[in-house]
Image 1 (tube, rainbow, N blue to C red):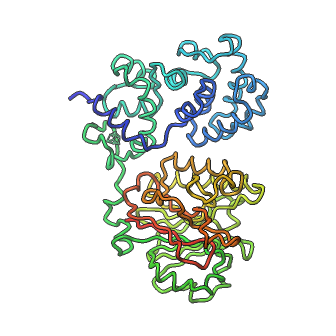
Image 2 (cartoon, rainbow, N blue to C red):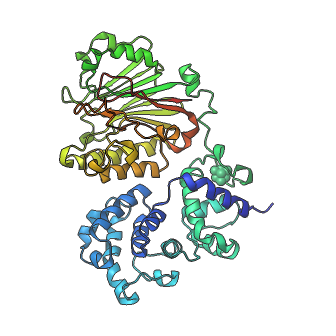
Length: 487
Ligand code: SF4
């Protein structure tokens, strides 16, 4: 039977509406500027979307027009766009772009494939994408995802992207030309991945002949050892709490709270202690395996995790020496998920430590992306950022302050834009739901707080999250615990 493209593409369009938007579409939607779309498209070749997004942001800060781009040298451009793939070549193309636009197109970005391919660094794929995305004109951009998936469907039988483009020009109804690239890029990144596609949760599985495909082994809720089975509870509960000093909170009833919350995994941030400074009653809680990751500096930062189930492996840090001295990232691998406990750095007054924090954030997102390729990812901790205005009591007064600066919030946008889920907001959209209150100004009593403690899961694990809560009634720290139930 012929492949039912008219059924499949509309189904997928709906499906990918919640997925990460491909970076070039995002830039087009945000800027409506053909010049920026063209530049981002040039940067995006052979580069992960998050890297392209960050490089584009850095570049547009310095040059958001052809005239401003002309003022940057190749060496400056190399520095700005690094680490996009082939950054040296791309820097050369970008340096030559203003003159090419000025000399041949009166300084304007042209809107046809034939004209665009005359520009430096612009091939057919880039040109088609710019025509479709920036000018909303019919063009079929065939990248590896479109080429690969169209062949998996048997809709075309072609040896390379150029042949696919030509075959699609003959065959694909024109109404799909503009959108087919963004749909299949999002779908190819989120479900029909190049290695081990998720046929187990694919909405078009019934229509797909899966030509040449090896689907991934199902690891999530259909696994014999789902979270529930591994931990022996119907709905395993995970708790995260920034205790702001474990020795201090021990004197305020930590162990009672610990047992009352009855967690299967209990993650702590800001323990501010070495294990040998702690009493046995917390180092060896019966029924739990405990993992400590203190900072090298005494009395500062540090994380710990208590788990009822022994993990397969424990990974300390991000593997980056400069980021791993403060004991901030502790990852436990279980059979069908990774649990990442993180104490994110504070950007500090005057945003003095913002650069360190942004680099840390970048590496964390990279880590999440790496791990979520094979298993579910549950990330928890004090993220030290309120994402949206609803997440703090006084957004207007804090626009430039650490924890609510545009740069920190932009990283949260990147995380959710990549499809990761802020689990609390899956269940609760109410105002005044906070997890941290300053010790000053009687803030907790007045509920002048911030929601900066989160559980975040990867997009494919949405259905595994059964509940998410903030335990604002639990005192002992300036943060309160947050929790999820995860099957
Ligand atoms: S069934 Fe599998 S191979 Fe076919 S489109 Fe879905 S994920 Fe891709």
